[in-house]
Image 1 (cartoon, rainbow, N blue to C red):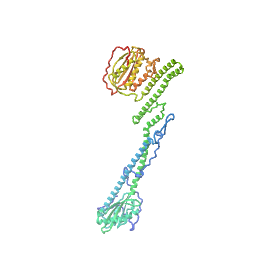
Image 2: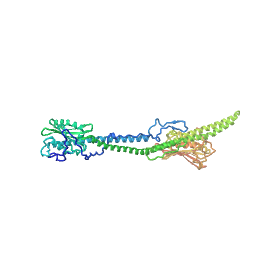
Image 3: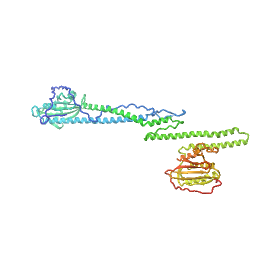
Image 4: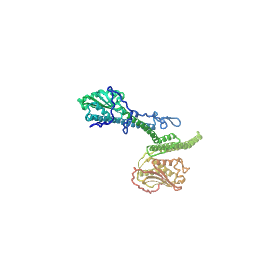
Length: 579
């Protein structure tokens, strides 16, 4: 609001106010356009219109169906979870949209409250400035008609109403002796006299404030909020007393309802923009979450296609994030499952293949046995016991192979390899009349399972004795280097042809078809070596013997005491030493 005065007060400017009859009248607007107060940058909408309604979440039946899973054969059903719940995608999108909506709602509500308070402060400041200018006009101004100080309140109010320029949604009125007498010029769009309830309330207040001029002049002016049925107003009442003792008051009022309505319109626009932002966040979140959960969908698809007959399917690892690690972990689990199922199938195939022959032999002899002939019964009994012993040995070897892929197949403990090599030589001597020789000793301690290594080493020694002649050399030894420990058995037997060297480690394969045995010995040796993280190497040639070497990797915990290799040259033993 701007005010001008004449003389030392405001310069004479504007047009005369519209004068109303003594009993009051209504001044009509001329319909001239008014200028709105521009909104404050960053203005937000009312909280009531900022509320948004979240769409109901839809269950993702592909990501989490919650249906019972039927195992092959229909023997058992197991439910994935208890009650059916929301999928991960639905929970993430719901949380994302709700949090985004709450954030925008809180931001908009806070900004609206702050902006509304700022508008109230601006209205109060404007009223205080206009009140101060009117008091200055009353005390120092002159009547533009006479050039002398104002002689009565009526002339003062007419000049003030003509020269004060109100803002949008701001009205003025003049009261003389508590009666509404003058209005703002009709050119101004807002006319406060349209609210008759407000005018009726202001009359007594102007008289009350005028009476305070004689007792407490500093407290006579009043700025307060008045509520009516039409709206809310922030009103300033400035009383004045003329030279003749007549009283009056200039009343200025802001329509707070209209001011706040403009602010609400701005925040309605904010609400629409916020709603669009939430929808956009939801759409982008759906695309992003779907892309992030793609490996999970592939995992589910792969898991649903896995059966006991096909465990070969794997999931492609994409990226290097947590989901890629999860995918790698699941692939590793599928590898272990495939190995476990493969081991079971191989065990069943091996049992069915190898036990069929001794059972057939026993059955055939029992069917042909002459019960009344003691000699025939004794012979059949000997054959049956021999076949049963062979089946028992075969079953033990198959069980060992089946256990070789289990984590608890080996029990590692700190072992002195040199001592173990010496013990192996001692245990090997009773197996046959050979020239037992110790090639070298590895002075090192290694984490290994001495029982399993002894089992594998004795199997190699047994093969060396089986495929070599009496008095030939069979040598044992161990050595160590920076990366591995080597345990070997060397013989001067028949040797193995190059074409068969890679086959002798397979199940039920015998290089010499006439030799006795199950064909599982070398398979067990390799399984024990692989359970330690190592392998078995073979060097052989027909007629020149074979050297089987168990290679075990060294770890950081293996503390080497030395790499002493001691050659022991002694006379060959002609007769085996009894244990």
